[in-house]
Length: 516
Image 1: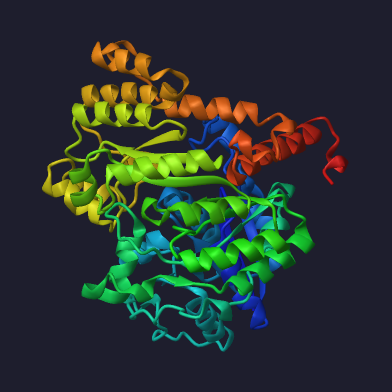
Image 2: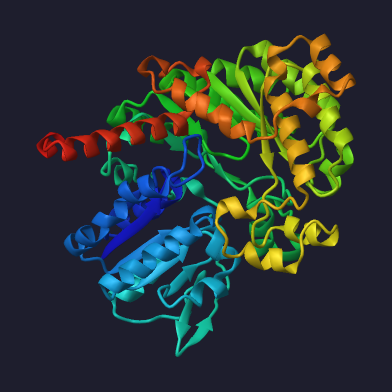
């Protein structure tokens, strides 16, 4: 059977695992990939005309004709749901081929996704063996409507099925099929993404893990079986094989918390340092960082750590976000990472229901007194099915119409801040949170005491700062020094823009033969 995956924007380890399982069973897989250049807010100006000019979907029809797929599979996050719907509708117009949607957005609202006449199946939850079972049933020309994790349509009615148990033995999975993405362009040669575990020990209200936990465990949603980790040996073998094949220079570990198990991290540190050694970025939870774990990260050549403070207000953090560490713990984590010399980024949410001006002032004060990290500030985003939606309704931050909109809206429209006055004030504080590291503490305190932030311009400083970073990494000498703070995704996006721009220029000047 020939299966074609359709995806956009970034590499997907999830798709690579799906492809590996299908290939291990004797099936063929290919990828249609659209980087969506100039179409998403990611540090460069968006432009409808440029996005149309660089739209890779113009070539999808020819590729589909060449591949002659038996099934087309979309991996869909909320940010790209409208793009996926548009593309699936185009494909249905070109050929009569079954289409399946999977990943978090269809998992949360499978019935609504299946109401689209261009979607035939939805994979709910973990998809490797559910998708394989679906492919096998199509191979036998049977429409099996009883496959666990698969929702389908029969006679105009939606057929739902329960989920199968989560894969507990992650070592039993084949290594991800990284060739799938590397066949579509050079930008994927810079580095690799990897996963050492699945799941998270937390169930934060704004995160998809809270929904997934309830999907599999119901009222027992904090069941520890949700968090599963690979053996160190299995992970190192994968990284070693990939290093021999791709000679990568960077790794981004997409685990929610690479340091959550100290003994595992200790073993990983020794094996990784001996067998791999390249710089990597990881995500951690502040509760996992202590003198031992930070030493293991440092000795294994971790170049960048990212973690979430999210809110300076302990009550907001505990009751609204379900984050249970203290400000004192975070201050200690900042000190430990700063002393280790590892670069670090701290995530903060603004626009949480109940946010006050005092919270924002306290946030800037806290980071001024605990310096060293790069402060990320993000607007709280409401996504379909997340607990934060119900919390927002209970506190009057959103209403039922907003909640319905989140089920189909693109990423940029899920940000709900009703008061423009409140929005402008928050944007001014984001500026202060961005630049405090460049000021002495007395100057930051002076700004806050005299409320000089009122005179800051009200604009999206986060976008401005990201554009400066994008401009800087157009220099080739910015790679691969981790101290520059340009992680794998930024480097890949840089090269995707340069790669496709060069292709267009060659085509315009009649040098299309130079594409290779």
